Image (cartoon, rainbow, N blue to C red; front, side, top):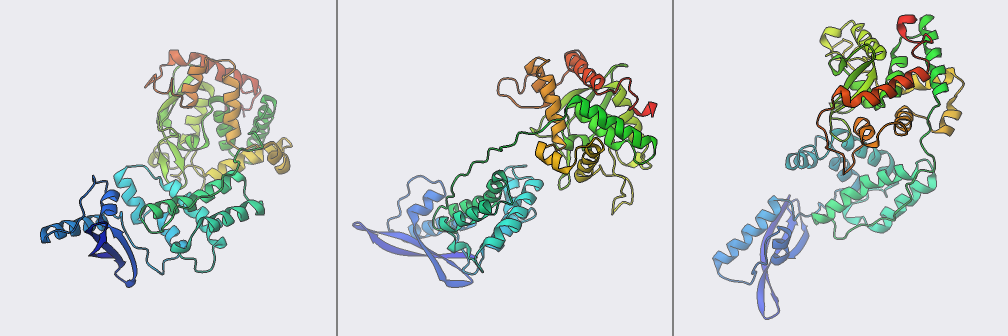
Length: 426
């Protein structure tokens, strides 16, 4: 804990008040600071700190006390290590993040905090000198860590940059709070990916759907993979949005078109949360798929207690013993990988082409943006743009008719209208 006492020093022609801040657990760990510097850290106007009467001394003591209480001045405990400080810094339930989210609600998400803590723990801590203290960190050490991560070649430059952010963010805040005495800088690295996101051809998607439908006929697997892929391909919904989909989000308009409201996403750490961009949007979905999605959700033995989750996990929840959780992210990804293997795209080919579940969204975006008004496309896709981001708060079906027609065209092109991979024909 940081404590203080007031001293005086002569600066220029007059004596001024100074403060000595110290760690109450180790009184040899001292930081001396002028009271004018303390006032500046508190955001106060220029303050007269020249020595005066007892009332003036009490005023200076109150200034120091406020600085300690607000955390703008503190003394680094001599024994605190960078490793422990970093783990505490990124602890979701810890004081730092709890306080930050009280000041600015939602500023640090649970998923982000967990990701940063894992990167710090997995990649930064093993490269720290033994018992490295927070107070000993400098730019030289930070850049050596970055160089090591880059030279090892196990992480992409983009991942290295994110990993280094888990370190530099906490060091910059430590510097602002005077826990370390200098600002740490790190060399910039090129994070542009050399590989563009791979997408599948319509012919490849059609082959996957037929192969998955054939497995369903042979009762090798259920229809989760086929429906998830079909939904992603015809609506451009993200993986987390698909996992969060519920029956109540599906509105059947007519025999051709339905509207899906996308207002939630699901992550393994935060569970149901707002979508990327924090905006609700409506997407057009072919009714032939929408009706299958509803039927799939209703097949859940625990449908009455799982809030209408469409893509429910086949594993019972540990605490509830019911099928009340969405399919896992890894489970959805493995379904896609299996479907790719069914048509001859093995792991090596998939990696070479850089195909992941998000590739299905990329394929949809690439298709609709060449055929539909760009403003409408961005609105449905959910990409924020300064000029068009908040034009509508709700999209009516008439507005979405061009998008709906495009979804049906994609469905036709991948053989979903007459080639028999939809479940009513299985």
